Image (cartoon, rainbow, N blue to C red; front, top):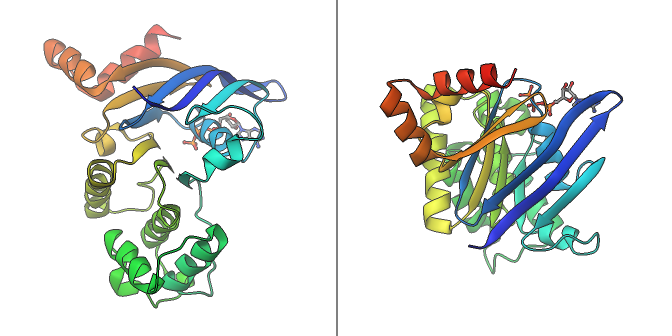
Length: 247
Ligand code: ATP
């Protein structure tokens, strides 16, 4: 199986605080990996290291089979990420924001780049807001725009940090569908984080449960579903029990 991401003892320390503590995990091509953990568990910090936004204190990181300082930036061009607040230009429209990203990444969309960018906006549900200034967007619309920006480079690996923030229940449902679609139709491997298990429960193929910087367990969706059914509990209870065991 092809590995998209492999970390070994990846660690980030802020003073005495171990934000990420020796996390070793593997994400295989085709996975929809759900990173689950309470606030402050270290999910964002982990993702920031994967994206090269911060340096690890210790440990190693391999992306698409490459781990050297020279190769990692090239591999990161195959990734798209939506981490924390999407960086959008408030005075520009949604479409203009995408065009800026296209030029920045130097992506060739042929003769009519606008058409492809419009398709992207439609995909994330912003087709009708293409010419609206980003400053007029709601939080949910900003998230959608952030997702479209993350997709401009045609990524093979997509990282979404708390993508449901700001979305209403219909938006959450649409996002789940979109994640599935991107995975199924475009073969994109996805790593997303969430502290709301119920919201993203049906979409992940694997879960990584995190708490206080540590990765407690990685389990396939099938396996955890079977365990939950056998015991008549839901995923949330499973996670809470795991937390209690590891206290
Ligand atoms: P959330 O869901 O709230 O985003 P999270 O799981 O993403 O939580 P992180 O944001 O990665 O968690 O934070 C993990 C820990 O690292 C927290 O204790 C946080 O206070 C700390 N931390 C994160 N960034 C920094 C920083 N730049 N300086 C100091 N401490 C930090």
